[in-house]
Image (tube, rainbow, N blue to C red; front, side, top):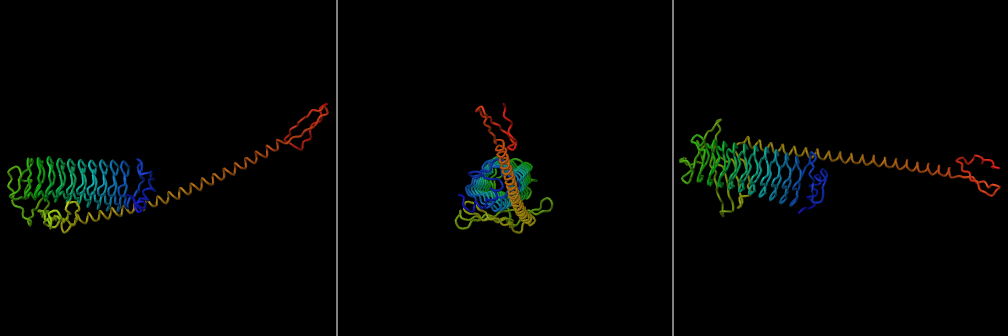
Length: 412
C-alpha cells in the first residue's frame, strides 16, 4: 500500500520519466541519472524499462518487477522482501547490501553482475542465470536453485546452507570456502569448479559431477553423495569426513579436525570445518561458524534472516567489499545530484520556452489587431459615397475613394 512518504520518495522518479495511472513508466529507456529510493510496498513495476537506474535505500516489499529491464542498475542498501523478479533482466548490475528474502527470481538473468553482501535466502531461483558474476558474501540459505547456472562465476564466501541445488550448474565456478552444508539435490555439476576449503557437511546429493574439480580441504562430514563422477585422489588432497560419510568411489577420508589446515597452491592456507549449533528449541536459532571465524551467521527458525559478520579471515576481501560499497554509495549520490541538476535545467529551459512562446503570441496578437484596424479604416474610406440627383429624376451614384474630388459634371 502506497503512503505519502512513498510519493515523496518517488517524486524524482516521476519528474524524470513521467508517470501514468498505476505508476506505469512506459517502454522508453529512462534518462541517465534515474534514482529510486524510499518505500513503495506492493507497487507494480512489471514490464518496465529501468535500465541503468539507481536504487539507494529503497524498500519495495511485496512489489513486482516481473519481465522488466534492469540491466546495468546499481542497487545499494535496499530491501526487496517477497518481491517478484521473474524473467527480469539484471545483467551487468552492481548490488551491495541488498536483501531478496523470499523473492521469486526464477528465470532472472544476473550475467556479468557484481554482487556483494546480498541475501537471497529462501528465494526461488529456479533457472536463474548467474554466469560470470562476481560475488562476495552472498547468502542462499534455504533457497531453491534448481537449474540455476553459476558457470564461471566467482563466489567468495558463498553460503548455500540447506539450499536445493538439483540440476544446478557450477561449471568452472570459483567456490572457495563455500558452505554447502545440508544441501540436497541431484544431477548437479561442479565440472572444473574450485571448491577448496568448502563444506558439504550433511549434504545429500545424487549423480554429482566433480570432473576436473579441485576438492582440496573439502569437509564431507556425514555427507551422503551417490553416483559421483570425476573424483581423484589428487583433487581431494586434504579432504576429510567421518564414519557417517558416504562417498562413492571407495574413498576413505580422514576424520575432520577443526584445527586442521592445509596448504594449497600459492602457499595459501585453507581451514575447513563448519560448526552448526542450535540454541534452545531446535527451530529457534541456528549458528553457523567457520572454524577460523570466517563467517558467523545467526538464523531464525526458518533459516531465512542471516546476520553476516566477517572476522579475521580474508581481511583483504572485507576491505574490498567495504570499499566497493562506499564507491557504490558515492556513485549513487553523484548520479542523484546530476539528476537534480538536469531536472533544474529542464525546468529552467521549460520556463524560458514558455516565456518566449508567450511573448511571440502577444506580438502576433498585436500585429493582428493592427491589421484589423487598417482594414476597417480602408473599408470606411471606400464606403464613402456621393449622390447627385439628376434632372430626369434618376439617381446617379458616384463612389470615390477620394471624398475631396469634385463630382463629374452632369451628362446632358
